[in-house]
Length: 165
Image (cartoon, rainbow, N blue to C red; front, side):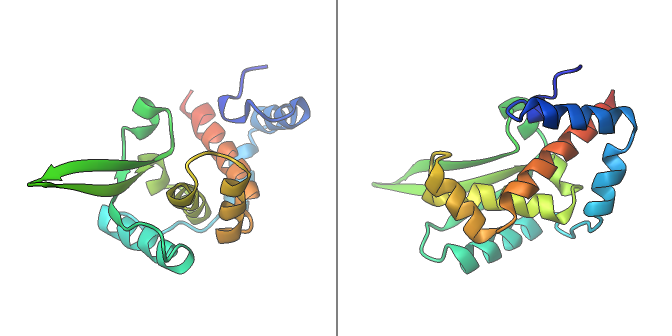
C-alpha cells in the first residue's frame, strides 16, 4: 500500500478503507456527492471579507487582521495549507504589529466547507498558538463539524494527489 501523507496519523483500518476507495475510483465521487457546493470566494478581497465576517461573529475581541490572501506557493514552500503570522515593522519611533492569514491556493477551487474549515483553523490560532485541547475546542465552537471537515479535507487532498499521478 502507498503511504497516504495526509492521513498518516489515522488508524490502519481507516487508511485501508481509503486505499479501497482509491482503487475502486470512488473517492472523488464520494466527496463530490457529499460536498457539491462550490464557494464564490475567488479574490483576495473576497477572502478578506469572508474571514473578517467569521472573525467578527466568533472572535470579536481578538486582534485585527492586516491581510488575508490566497497563496499559491503555500503548500509547496511551507508544507502547510494555511498560515497565520505576526509581522512587526518599525514606523518612525513606533513598532507596528500586523496579523496576516494566508490560505493555500488549492482552497480557491475547493468545496465551500473546506474553505470554511481552514479559515476556522487559522482564526483559532489568533487565540491559541498551539494545537492543544483549547485550540480544538475553539475550532469546534466556531464550526461544530470541524473534525469531520478536517478528515474529509484530508481525503480531498489525497484525491487531488492521486488524480495528479
